[in-house]
Length: 277
Image 1 (tube, rainbow, N blue to C red):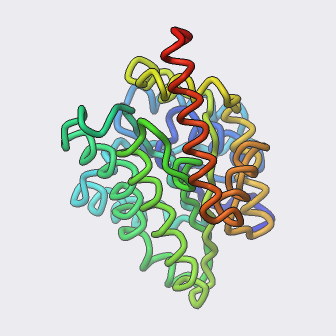
Image 2: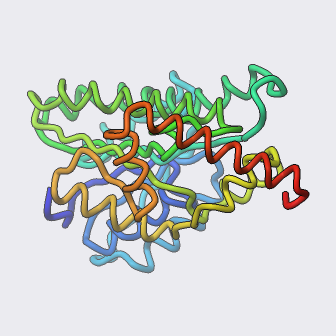
């Protein structure tokens, strides 16, 4: 999909962060945009931002829905398809996290994160897959994370959800080739979003020390890399050097990946014990 002009793009989590950045850039390229999120006020604010950059000043549609509610998603998107049409482009950007040590976190946290990150992607895809297959065209984008490439101290719940997203994308890629539907999975590093701010107070000290080693991308940079990936029909998108580094290490290093993570975690532990975090 090289030309987005008048293509219909549905972006979950489109009211903020990476989702909003992708929606704005697609709108500037002429796409018709629909954004889905839970909070109506945030959706209205995002709608105004997107309309300001829309290439053809086309209307921006908003959908207030909780992606973790399967029945609600199914009903809402059935109505959307009937009234608006079948999306040419589906982007899964709705996501949450709350770091913490495994033994401290209630299973409710694991369930909440999996419900939004994995099942949210699953439910929305399920609701739209038959209409998309009927068109024999389209593209689906899953936003995973570096935490979907390697297990990170303090992110057991988040890593599990993002590895699940990765597995779903990899299997769907094979199946949907027969239907003319492309699949892309994106592995962003830490990105400057409201979600990144939310998680800071929950980070264990060792996790904070590990985070100090990494940079933070702007959501616009992740959006640009994602859109380039769609245009080139790439399955894997790794925005920025850090994501590319970890993808290469996770792919080619074998057991060396875990040795590297062990070394980094031990380094972080020493920093914490030295009173630096």
